[in-house]
Length: 182
Length: 123
Image (spheres, helix red, strand yellow):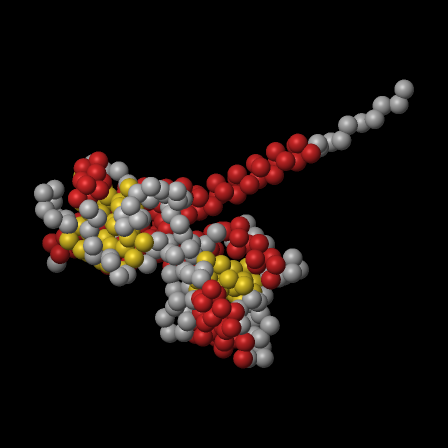
């Protein structure tokens, strides 16, 4: 009896390989974005350059031209604008959201299918040094073609929360030690 | 066979670093310029196989650079993909009027950019 050899790869194998390739490409894309953001945030100890890097990550990687960075000296003090870009940039979010983000230390981000009020910011990101919230990034609006934050944007927001505050803090320490040396 | 040369043009260090990284596994040689004026000079001298250029830049915008590249014999036929923060009809129309071949919106999506580059390079 003549035996027919089975095909080396079935259609199901090919579909699985394509799916794995797609997942791998998506993972590489996410990791590349996180690597670039991290590298930009920690490249300099100069305060102006750190602020420029934060702005660049928000504009280029998350996609917004309407946002502000706020900082405060210590726990109970008010937040002051360190940098703002766009029309409504220096506006603070409402008290409830502000308390949620500052006291909870968690990122607020409006997802693509969100029931939040349309005037709510697209994202509110606490700037943390350890457990202490030293500042905030408020992203009022995303680029017009972006309907909301996707999973990569939320990863970038988390990265900003954990690293942007530390980068600003390191730049302040550096400025202080440089001034003392002089 | 020499690798095809792609010129990336953006004033943002983040955008240049990210785009370079996203195209790292592609078979292209990547070079960069920081504004439209640098891009026109580089393209005239080096004749890249394709240009990926931001729209909003200091000194010379992507739209102005695109027009300048289309006016010169040496650079007239180089495919140009504009990178814009706005995907609305007016902005896209302005890009095509200036002579670009295609566009992508920011934030850049690596696979999308690679696919458009391949299209423009006839691959």
